[in-house]
Image (cartoon, rainbow, N blue to C red; front, side, top):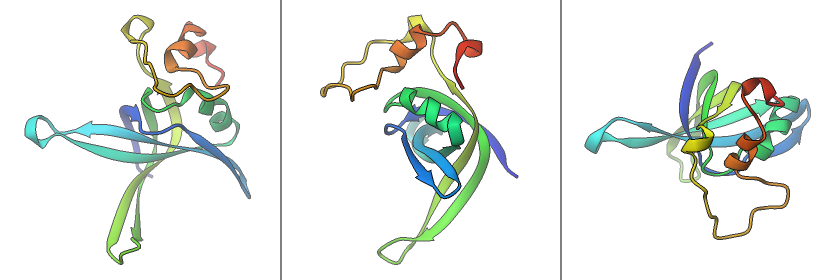
Length: 135
């Protein structure tokens, strides 16, 4: 098993779906690697299984800074054009929402937020620390 920890920002809102063995919440994290002219973005596809994933999904909106730990894998596949492709995936074991209350700037989205969705700053204001998180 390859376990890793990385930090980045969510590239899209988390999505939860039902499978034959329960539910899975999927999201992608953009991780900056390298420095200077060699800096690039590495995308990691993340999956959080079961009730934990369902509970945390409402807090995982595009742009939210997170730190993720879990089992890392490289999934190889053939693209539609016939070329080989690969994706780094993480089966999430631990997820931490990043940033202190004072470090957050209010983010104004062009579109109105989805019903029931709140920004990470609004969510963080509800909790004093990790011990208060519902997951």
